[in-house]
Amino acid sequence: MEISFQLKMSSEESLMELGYGDFGCSHYRRRCKIRTPCCDEIFGCRHCHNESKNSMEVDPRHRHDVPRHELKRVICSLCATEQDVSKNQYHCNECGICRTGGGENFFHCSKCGCCYSNLLKDSHKCVERAMHHNCPVCFEFLFDTTRDITVLRCGHTIHLECVKEMERHFRYSCPICLKSYCDMSQVWEKLDQEVASTPMPQMYDNKMVWILCNDCGESSEVNFHVLAHKCPNCNSYNTRKTRGGPASYSPGISQMM
Image (cartoon, rainbow, N blue to C red; front, top):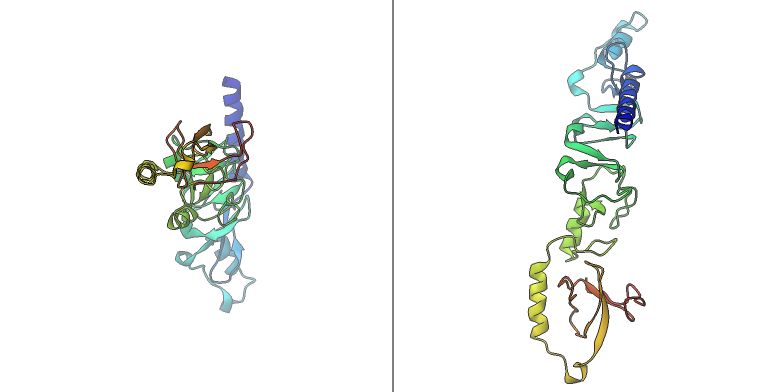
C-alpha cells in the first residue's frame, strides 16, 4: 500500500510539474493562455502581449496594451480547449480534458473514469466508464459535454435537462437499464387502488403470467391483470411480461413503464 501510494503521489507530482514546468511563460508558470480581445491573438499572458505589441519593431500608431478586464477567452495548454473565462474552468489530468465549474467543486472517480460534483462523492453508484457513452435521450457524447450531468440511482449518467424532459412525459425509469430512478411508492399505491377497483372477468381468474421486475430483477408468476402486474418481491409495478419462467423470458415483450 505504501509503495502504491508513493507511486500515485509521484505520478500526480509529475503531472503537476509537467503543467508548471513545461508550460506558461516567463511571467507566469501556468497551464493556460489567453486570447486577447484587442487583436484576437493568443499569448501566454497579458504581459507577453504588451511586450510584443509595444516593442520597437511595432509602428507607434499600433502600439497598445491589452484591456485585461475585457479578456473573455482562455486556452488550455494541455488539451488546447478554448472556452470562456467566466466558466471557472479547470484541467483534470485523469480525464485529460478541461472542465468547467471550478476544480474545488468536483472530484474524479477513477472507477467511473470521470469528474462528478462533490455532492455525489459518497452517494453515487460507480459504473465503469460511466460517461464514456452518448446520452440515452439526446445522444450527445457525455464525457466532454458542457451541459449539466446527473447520476441516476442505478449509476447511469444522463443530461439533467434530459431527465427533466423525460419527467414532462411521465417517464421515470432509466432509459438504459429501465430501473426506477426516483421514489415511486406513491405511484405504486395508486396503482394498487386502480387494480383493486378493476376486477377482471371470471374467465381470467386463474390466468397466470410470468413477469420480470425491472427494479429488483426478480422473475415471478402472478395473476394476470389488464392494468399492471405487481412484483411480489419488491412491490414495484415497473415490470414486464415474459414468455415463460425465469430461464425463458424475452425482454421487451411487454413493459409497464
